[in-house]
Every structure is written in structure tokens, then in C-alpha cells.
Image (cartoon, rainbow over all chains, first blue to last red; front, top):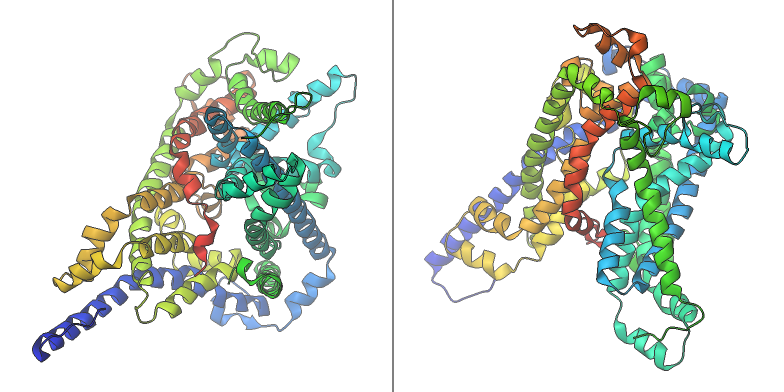
Length: 315
Length: 295
């Protein structure tokens, strides 16, 4: 606040009001902070269940401590290796393919000069972003249904054999990557396109005068200008590489057991162990590992980026 | 600005790529609509076709004969979307406004308190036990509303916008003796309509598309959301058949057009909102500015 010459009385009144307003500001924060406490911080405390043998009748406090028993059990089973591998490999695929497609589309869109086309392409490509994974699951089913699906009809048209898509796990890393890219490419393309719109036009003009060709302009001006955004988004995704998009894995595979070997990930596994098998200790132990590893990964990637290029770091 | 070379027109190539992608995006939608208007016998003989051999409304007739579950699901989904989004936006703005003031005491602590939840979370199981065993929100409408009221990402989005409102405006109101609540409701909110719309639409989209909450916490048939109802129909066609056999005019289970009815349900449940959301595209795009979290 600006200082102004005021009499003592006015000054005191101003201070009291200042103090009152401060309390009002704090009071505005109370309900939201309380909600965050209940729905975010209390579950963090619930992670102690990973060290307990949870029983519904005894509750969190009544259940007995079992030390590392749950973890020994989890780490010794083959399941954990499988779901950790699937989660990381599939997410890595999504990150790499998604990034390349979105940046490539943005650069191509930047070259389309007529506004009407830019608008039309954007609007259509964004549509899948509004869909829930349930609907995408319907679409996948319509195409992959072994008896009626359009993909199998097409295969037959070319004289190839039908494929039992929901029984063959080998195809699913590709199917999931395509579906994930299909759903997110539009919105990510628009995000990078918006960043491109922010480039100072004089760079391109200078390059033009120097006789740079299109590829050189892309390589030395367009792509470097997207690097900060690419870094931030990739840190965020790498930080989340241990967390899977539950809907994608659950709805598209229709939770078919035959596909688990390549499609079962952390979140679907935790859900299944908790709800279908009802093994709370085991599912919390996996959840605990997921939370801790995810946390460490975010801090680590951010630390590395901070060392290389502090401006691109998240915090 | 740029000179085109005659023998290799990249812009034309790019147009072709985009047109191809647009077809790839639209194809599954058209396929689902086409199946829903198909004849069940044609589907059984020739599989799903993009152009139905015989235009047939029997799938829709079947669904509308016993529409109670869809009506219930529409009610639940609309209620949670409208009420949840409204409360959420107000509460998030209420915490974002103090955070946008550089001189507010405790600002750093509250920011960190919120930001930390983006880095670390307790996960599915502790939340599930908390909500079912301690808060007993399962099988109530509130389980759709309360847990998701504060989206930290959106709070930071709001904070960044509020911080851009000229300080002089607020200070002059403060000197006139206005309370912070008065400033918040009569100045900040009206000045922030674009960002409020963005956050509201992002929140509405999340709520409208939610099936996971219902799958975890709801057993009561009357409290299913649209997306969860659809999921159950896709995973388990018997659900539809039960509906069919319960209906008074007694269609036998074998006669039920199951493949086309599934897709008709998808069209009825997802269609209307899909026609609405694209009109608000610019608000969704605005919400993606990532830089807003920093600072």
C-alpha cells in the first residue's frame, strides 16, 4: 500500500481495517483448505495401512501392525514386476508417440495459412478430448469385435485371417497407444500451436532473407521455440509415469483377463485386488509403492531439469 | 510471406494429412451412429457397416420402451455436474483470491499446502476406506460432489488470472471501507468471467464423464451416472436383457437386438453433450496454459 500523510487517528483506523481484511482473507481459505485436508491429506495418512493387516471390523487404528510383511508378499509375487513393467513401458510409449504426433501436427498446422482450415481441423481433432473412456471403449469394441468388428471385416476383404482381438495380448500395447494418441492429439496439438503463435515473426523474416529453406526454419526456429513447453509437459508426464490412466486400461480392454499380461497396470491391479479379491493390505502396499515412487520421480525429473535449464523446471 | 516451390507443395501435403486425420477421428462416431440405426439381422450376417443396409429404428424403440434407467442416470449426472461445478468454482475462487495477493500473510504456506497434493497422493485404497468406512458417503449423491470440489490445478489457474487484475482497483475499494468478501463478490468475480467459464467447463467435463466414482461407491441403481450405466451395458449385455424381460410387452431375450441397442444407448447417453462441448472450445483451450502453475 502507498504511504500517505495521515493523522494518527486515521492511521489507526486504517490498520484495524487492514487487520480485519486479513482475517477475512484467511477465512475465505478455510473451507477449501478443510476439503483438501479431508480428501487429500487424510488418505496420505491412510498409507500406514501398507504396514498393517487391515480388517474392516477393526478399522485403521485397531488393525495390527505387520511391518514389512505386505511388501515382502507383493515384491515376491510375479504380479508386481508385470504391472510395473506394463505401466512404465506403456506410459513411455504414450509419452514419446504423443509428443511426436502433437508437435508434428502443430508445426504442420502452423503452415496452413487459411484461418478457416486451421479452425476446422482444430475443432474436429479436439472432439475426442470431450469423450469419456467409456465411449472410446464402445468405439474400440465396434472396430475390434471379433465377429462383427470393422477391422476384421477389412482383414477378410484383403484375404487375411480374422483376429480374436480380445484374446490376443500382443496387439494391445499398439492398440492402447493408438487410442491414447487418437484421444489426446487434438488438444495437445492446439497447445503447441498456441505456443507457435507466440513466436516473434521477425525470426522467420530474418531466416527468409538469409535464404533458409523450410526444413532449416523448422529445425532451428520452430522446434527450439517449442522446447520449453515440451520439457514442462514431459516432466509432468514422466513424474506421472507410475500412474496409469485407469479408464484407458479398464474400459478399452473391457477388463478381459486374457489381456492382463500386456495391459494390467498399477491402477487396474490395485482396483482389482481391492474390489474383486478384497485384499486391502496387498492393494495398499502396491498403492504405497506407487505413491512413493511417483513422488520421487517428480522430484528427480524436476531436479534434473533445474540443473540443465532452470526456466523450464516446474518448481 | 513464403515462396512456394512448384514441384513440391508442402501445404497441400499437410492438408491431405489433416483431412485423413479428421476422417480417422470422425469414423468411429459415424460407425456407432450407423450401427444404432442398423437392423440386428444385418449386423449378425455382415457385421458392423458404416452405411446400414436397412435403416431401422428398432434399437431406439427398444430403449425408449423402458427408459427409466436412462432418465435416472441423466438426472443424477445433470445434478452432480451443475451443483458440483457451481460449488467447486465458488470455493476454488475463494481460495485463489487470497493467494493472488502478493502481500497476504501465509500465502506461501497455503500455496505449498495445495501444491503438495499435486506431487503426492494417498491413492485409491485409503480414499476408498475413508469414504466408505469413516465418512459413509457411499451410495449418496454427495460422493460425486464433495471429494472433487477443490481441483488444485484449477485453483492455480484462477490465482494467475486474479493476480493480473489491477491492484489499484482493489485498493481504492479497500480505502472506501469495502470488506474483502464484498470486493470478491462484486469486483473480482464479475471481472473474471472468462477464467471462471474456463474452470467451470473443465470441471463440468470431468463430472459429466465420470464413471469411476459410481463404479467404486454406488450400488443403488437409482444413483448411477450415465457413463457408468453405459459401461455396465458394454461389459455386460445381460443387464439390457433383464430390462427387456422386465418390460411389460414381454420381448423374449433372444429377440432382443443387443448389438444395435448397445450403440443406441451410447448415442442417447453421449450424443447431446458432444454437440454442446465443441461450442465452448476456446474456453477449454484457454484452460491448458501450463505456465500458470509456476510462480
